[in-house]
Structure formats: structure tokens, C-alpha cells
Image (cartoon, rainbow, N blue to C red; front, side, top):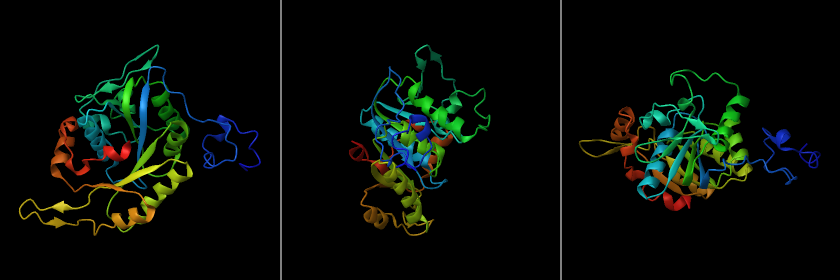
Length: 278
């Protein structure tokens, strides 16, 4: 179908098509224009093949590493139906706009954040929207938000390979993705799903982070593999991507989340991750 329509494809007709990135017609640029007042050097997507792997925690942790290195960072919370980034940073205000666009809210450490929670009447209101509306909001977070000068914009995506990841890959100039997973028996399949989607969309995979990798006993310091033995190294080797970090179940990080003070976190487990994002 893509071959037959190569001379008639338009931006509108290609949206939502899984073959858009590999279509023989290269005439259609599906990227949404950024807000004229936004100057973002790199856009990095944080993805996972399934839910429950702590993707938002990893997104915020990477942001903290980058901020500590002196970079200007923003987080686009594309997990529209399950936004958690603002609360982690203790942000409960409402985003305001002007004739030029919408201003993200700046956290205590300078991280700029935009999330649907910052637009709702109440942050506890459910988002009961269909896919096309959700996808439209994600695009607006890129084209209508005034991000200003950023070295990195991290996009916290919902799990899986559905509408929103597809919209982000097609509509935003994504420079690469980080895959988040956990040490379970299905890890190979889960990582490969996210990896293969990125490759089909012609997006570089920068590496993989394993979350919930182990639990360290506070008394004897023995490592306990709560979710089984890790296989992330062999999977990463097979896919020829680096392991960016292995994060344990750390109660200190959970305490920062509960206290809504993630802007104070220093995540040693992802030290050096910025080298893979350049």
C-alpha cells in the first residue's frame, strides 16, 4: 500500500501508519514544527515494552543526572493517562499561556516540565480520551509549549507500542531512545518489542536501563534478586546496545518520590549516562 501511494502520501494520510518511516516516498516530513521560542538541542525518548518497570522514575533520574552536569533539561510527560512527573517534583500549579504559547513549569532544580496534570482542573481528574485526542495533546506539548533554551528534552512515554509512541516518533525530531526494563523472564521479548519499534521508525536506540535489578540487604549488604537473575547484559549484547545502568530497589529514591522532592535526588546508579546521550 505504501508503494502504491508513494506519490499521493500526505502528512495527514501518513499519521498513524506504521509504515510511514519506511515508506518509499520520502517527500513527506511528518515532524511538527517546534514553538518558535523553543530551541531544543536533543530530544530523547524514554520507552518500555510494558508497564510497571518504573519508566517515569528512570526519566526523572536521567534528568537529574543531566542537571547535575550543568545541562538545561526539560521533561515532556507524554504518559497522558498516567502522568506522574509533576507530583514527583512537587509541582501542583497550573501552566499558564500567552499569545506565543504555553509555559512549562520549572521545578526547584530548574527542570522544565509539561504534563496534562498541569492543565486539568484537578490533578485527580481522569483523562478519558480516545487515542487521536491523546496524540494531538502530545503534539501540542511540542509545538505550542515554549521550552526556551534546552540541551535535552526527555519524553516520558507510556508503555507499549501504541498511538502515543508512534505519534512521538513521527511528529517529534527524536534523536534517540532509552529502553527501560526489569529483570524478569520476559525481558528479552519486552526489550525487543521496544527496540524493533524504534528501528522500524528509524530512531537510534541509545541503550537500556534495568530497573528493580536487585535489593541490597541493609544489614549484610547481600544482593537479593527479587525478580530473578538479570539477563540484561546478554540481551544488550545480542542487540548491540549498551547497558546504561542497573538500578536496585532503593527505598531512598521511593522516599524522595513520596516526599515530592525528586529535584534533590542524586542517582549514583546512572552516573555517566550523559555520555551515551550526546
